Amino acid sequence: MFVTFEGLDGSGKTTQAALLRARLAAEGESVVATREPGGTELGERIRDLVLHGGHVAPWAEALLYAASRAQHVEEVIRPALERGASVVCDRYVDSSVAYQGGARGLGMNRVLELNLAAVGGLMPHRTFLLVFDPAAVRTRLGSDHDRIEREDVDFYARVAAAYRELADRFSKRIVVLDGARPAHELAEEVYGALREGS
Image (tube, rainbow, N blue to C red):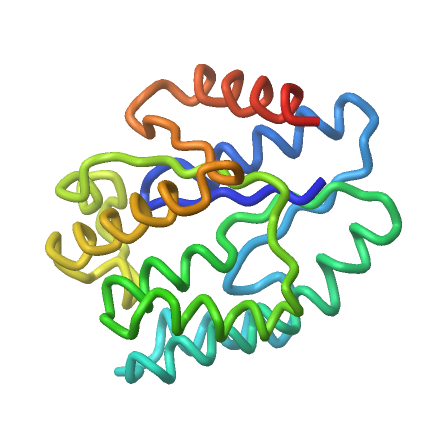
């Protein structure tokens, strides 16, 4: 089982990914928890470059994320799935499609095609999209922001709109959740949706 969590920065996806990993592990499942960008040595270097470096052109940003993802799939995700482990990933292809394809204006289909090539077509069995008000992003993030988190509310509104479009387009894979709800309630809904679909 390959499960991903998506949403705006501060949506609670990282918390939900950790709660799901812990629950599956407590049930005796072999689980690999990972994140993007990152998950590998190369990926973590790219993460630092993209999030904490200077200006990055939109296509350079998209290509760097795709490069990190290609390494991640080859080194971590595909081997875990092949040995029978479940993979829980904080962000994946949908993030690039929403942030670079939608919000940066590169074109959602173009960025999706780029990433499908990078990952050899490997997509999650289930994606949980946590939605909430783009105007609340800054409030949830606190004071220490990376390069993407410093974007304005209009940027985040475009990301949110792109995520909604993805959820409509891939409704069999993407489960939309209200990110404003308490974490424990969301965790139960996530677990229930996985068990229903397995």
